[in-house]
Image 1 (cartoon, one colour):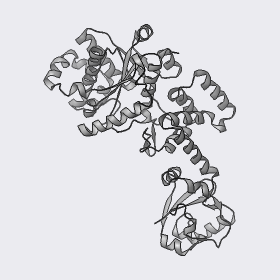
Image 2 (spheres, one colour):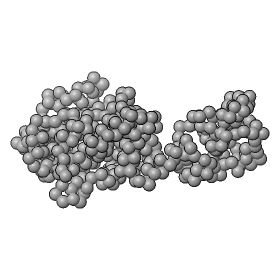
Image 3 (cartoon, helix red, strand yellow):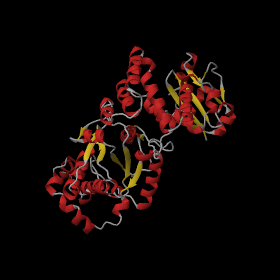
Image 4 (cartoon, one colour):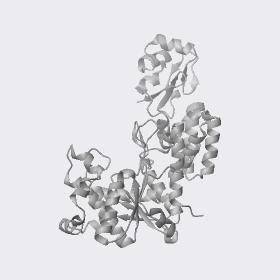
Length: 426
């Protein structure tokens, strides 16, 4: 059943600005609309997921979604919301990035469903033969400098200086809209709220140069409840490519969301109905410690971005952290083992010394720095507060040797309930 696109965005908290007449147009006819994606990486990040979900809702409402991958604009750089000019990329790198992003978009959008099949376009295709003189003659004359200077993305940068390349970006993006309106019948451009100025430059160019009408719609910029930027962790961006962000870390990002953020995320990043979400919220409110919202969110999005197998492996790995045995740890791949204990202190010890045998006290206080002194190590072991490879250490005379290495390389020390240390034999 087709949904009402604008109403769907509203209840999900995904509508920021909408140009008058846009909703009437969408209710009247099937519309082709597009969103631009930045090709400066070979993977999209979860920050792009808002726009991917917007296109997905657009398609489910019976409209035709188009993703514009900015092969040309990636060579220029969009100043919106940024404080520094972007590094420009060469054509080979851009083409590689575009091919990788296309594969990711194909996981979400249906590219073979008839009249409203999704489509991907690259603005390099129409800019590569467009000379600078032609551009300023055919495009630049329609938009005044006063109009361009009034944009927030320009005004906010003028004090610290702004290159002509960045200043002209809104004309380039505006021409994208004009070209697609004229050649592909596109009537709507969507994007994050920081793109509003660039989008309406396009509608203005269509009005002035083509005597036509086009529309605009934006989504809010997502921020975490604590005010920090969404889509980043201490380790950097959270990517959709598991080679950049493992499925386990991806799963953990959503699982560790605060209750307030989970309420926002589950509306934006899943396809759950309003009734299902409200039911989950009621369940969560009755027993917040069970984290029903976070678990449902993490499961849904991990399966859709990666796979059910990746989700199951992530859940198993999470359980091993709290309840696993030495056998469970040994079953993990090295990559997943290191993912689970990413960020915990790591120490390297000599394999030769381990082969000869090292007393547990010396191992914990001298060969590694798990404890600052032998006395403290001894006291903690006597109190039952130290575990080796998930097994509590009870023998003060225990000798550490190579038989205790997990997959012949690692040991896991646990001090108290929450302090882990990874020991690597080299």
